[in-house]
Image (cartoon, rainbow, N blue to C red; front, side):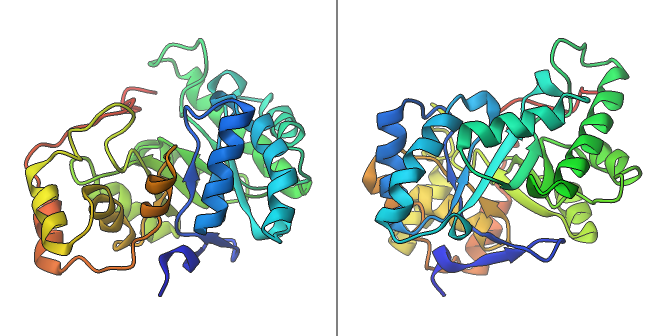
Length: 291
């Protein structure tokens, strides 16, 4: 089956595309229009953004033109945005409203708490737990008000997730978006997500911005040569083959197309090789020390 057509069933019963288009560090009206034009043409139907990406207005503006161009309606597109750490707490509801205004749409498909800590709050402060609990309560209210269809979290560890599940104000998180690639994958976290029906969605699948370590890894390149694919496609397919969502970002048309062209299988023996890459290295921010 064409990977671009595969959808996950979230614990709410709603469907979410397996592959999304990431927009981190992609800014400016013209550039956003260009990459979204190419992404929609290539088959992407999920767009991932965040308050701290400072591109929501550009995305909203681009979609006004691009959806009709591709004969699409708002409901054909899955839009995710995220809460800024500076908006943790009771401000979270207003933050959702502001994202909707910028994106110029009536609802969001998914809204995530971007980080378990709060802005200008020490990492070891218990205030973080209190504020993210208030944030979740505000997001539950946003769901009940019809502003958001599903809610979830990002960068939550097993501890953060268990704390939320113990006091979820009536709605369990649908998604946990975390750094996930062959050199950093926490099986305990994946097992918890599976147990609770939470979709694990990967970011930094290719190693993160400006980091070519994964793409240059000898094992990854050897497997790519064996399968006749690119190293990036191997890394993305590795996640997809484990039913983990991905949101690769790209600016060139060729990369945008190849990142969604994942209709091949990595044999079990080669998957095992990827799973056992020796260096366990995290490339993005680390939430472990957030109380």
